[in-house]
Amino acid sequence: MKKILMLAAAVVFSTAAFAQGEKTTVRDDASGAKTTIEERDNGTVKVEARSGRTKAGQKAYNTKEDVKYAGKKTGSVVKKGANKTGRAVKKGAKAVKNKAEDVVD
Image (tube, rainbow, N blue to C red; front, side, top):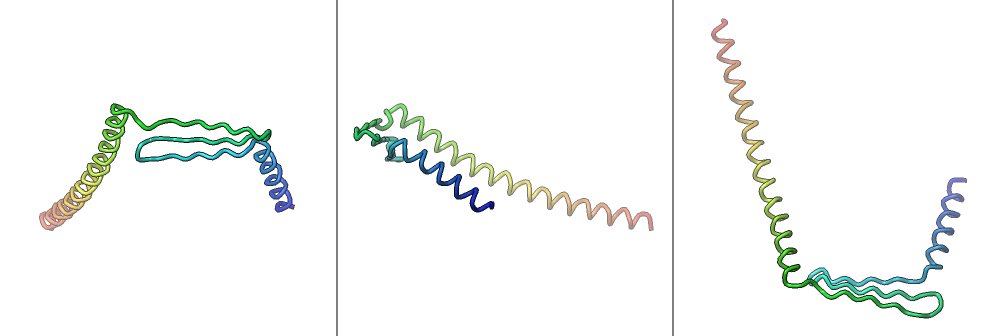
């Protein structure tokens, strides 16, 4: 029963998507350019093209990528330092515990 319901849902959605016409998007991640081609049911074709980034936009994109990279590097260093500090604290607490037991004895 479950399989039949899933199959029926897939058929309904696929026919609804088919009625919309085909839409193809081509994107160039390096320059940011994007072209969308839509073929409608009546045979017409709609083409939308967006050129790449401006110089200012490219600088903003580069800055964003640099910040993302620096954030990853910084996070890694912070994590490494926290792990080292945690180990040192644990070692120090163990040493204090051992001295306290010696004093009590």
